[in-house]
Length: 290
Image (cartoon, rainbow, N blue to C red):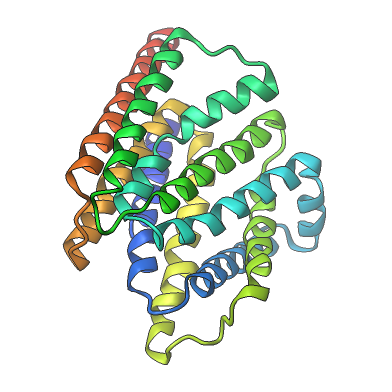
């Protein structure tokens, strides 16, 4: 198996395992912050165990070696993870995932402000059209019983926060940020702990809680950290768009939460624009390789 096939397979699996994320948040009968605690704690704890399995006693040094950029990455990634559950509990799943699809736009802006990277004409048009799609989604939040502008704002906070984390990882691209993942998730769990009672989970819900954070998010986080090592970032971005399409459909199918016509129109704009934009990048990369 060559690197291209390996990267496609790993990244696709990572995306597919994150698709049920919002559905779990919807069907677990518990306080949103309690769900956030277990989602983050289980993912962080099992990732840490995995690191000890791979690196043994060198694991603490591996974590420390991520340096200040590792702290930035962990801080903003953990913060975005907290906001995800809050966003899903305050607006429709469709609104959240469609807004999250715009994360590459926030990453481009962050890279321009922080790293001084030039924003191309293609990206200027992409930003403009994605902003149009987000405006349509926001406009429709007033007419959809499942949606609300507060959750939409939280989703924008997720996209922008995670973009800062990714930019920090790119700033220190010679250093693997995988050892910083447990710090991000366990830190997020500890941050919400004073505001919730994580043990107040209905006994029948514990299976879903562990399946959510200890399996689906754990595997997704691991695979999405490994996949981009083998394929271009534009290709990763295209595959991640699958979540924006499949997640609302999954929630719609299982619990009947309709996205709403405005969310579908706005989401279609966002996804289509990003799809074409990333496809253009891939078409430029591949001829250069041949």
